Image: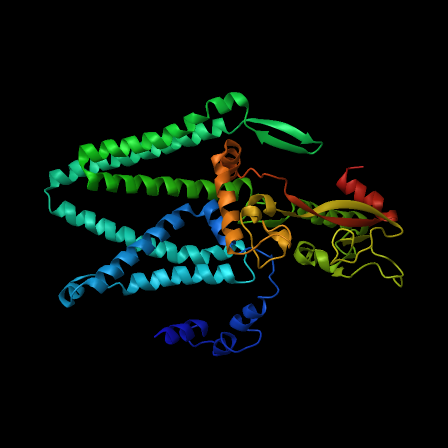
Amino acid sequence: MILSIFFTLFTTFFANPRGFQSSTFAANGTLLYWLGQQDVQRGEQPWFYFITEGLQYEWLAIFLGVAGLIFTGVLVGRYMLGTGVARAASRSPLFPVFLSAWLVFMFLVLSWAGEKMPWLITHITLPAFLIGGLVLNTVVEGASAWLRSHDAAAGAHWMRPALALAAGLVAIAGSGFFLSSRMTYGRWNQLSENLWERTVPAATLNDWWMLALPPLAALALIGFAVRRMGARRAAYGTLIGALAVLTLFQVHAGFWMTYFNGDGANDTLIYNTVGSDVTQLSNDLNEMSHLMYGDDSMPVIYDNCTAWPLNWNLRDLPNSRVQATVAATDQTPPPVVIGVPKSFDSDCSMPLEIEGYTIQQYTFRWHEPESEIYRRFAIAPELPPARSAWGSASKPHGPGAIVNSVWSSTTQIADPAGQQRLFRLLAFREMPAGVTRYRVNVYIRDDALAYYNAVRYGE
């Protein structure tokens, strides 16, 4: 059955017979290509990458996935321990086991894989949401059956207090959010000329205990609800409130990433993005071509390190092309050369200066400060020492050292400064360090500089 599903999908319902080859034994196919990328380790992400990424964005998926795994374990246990009659009457655990295996398998395989990219987390969250939906369906069925065993008046009596409890928990969570926002605002202290750090003033530290009030209020409300309406009704109301709060956080994180940081590298889900300077550059060069040539025929060359995405951004300039540098044999050097000097990036080869050209520097890409956000969370012995909390090859990096590194990072949130950094990161994507800038040089031929200045600076 599994093979029939596999080949049906990979051959696009048998419309693409080559899908059988590309999905199995083809050297450049889906399977063997990615296995060949294991040693490349593009991105050099640690084994805990999807753990730290999920904790930043996927609270709802984590909650539902963990609940689903527990639900599957209980279901399998009851099925295995039951008698033949009991098994026949009970729910089959086959589908929950399938979803749980899918979830665990994808998490383990992607955490082991050499190349880990942020968008791959969707392969983990999908089965988590599916099995979570199965759990919620079971809860709703149980609640409906319980309501049917009572009269309509009792059902209405149950719904109102449960929804009131859920609304109260959402209100408490909202008050906790606004209280935390105010308490963690602090003040900025300048550490150096271009480096500032947000700190918690001493006066605020004296009131730090107030952050415990919202969780205590939520526990008190749940306890009051259990006493007044019973454990079952209170549990349903608490579940509704928890799902609402987690959903609101998910929407908040997605809204902030999409509409506030859409073209910035302030999110692990984005992590690396082309800077807005590239759009400015392409617009400037298009306008410069029309000013200098009267059309879009201006020649432009750019090196391999900038070919992506300049192949697209300069698509309106048909005489733009990839070339390592200005060749000595070029009789008429192009008015504009774009490239990354070797001193900026050892994998690039553009010279730092080109005779007869004036340099303008742009920001080509922005990259999130990985080390300050998640790389120092734990030791990753599969990576070079500098790429995780390992730090140095001379330091221990066995299982005990890995556990200690995780514990050390986790206990940092017991400190007010650690709590402040974590909350400001999750709620407002405030970076503990500045984003990394990847620079590019734009070389303007001296006799064309006046045209460039007219476009760029209005001179």
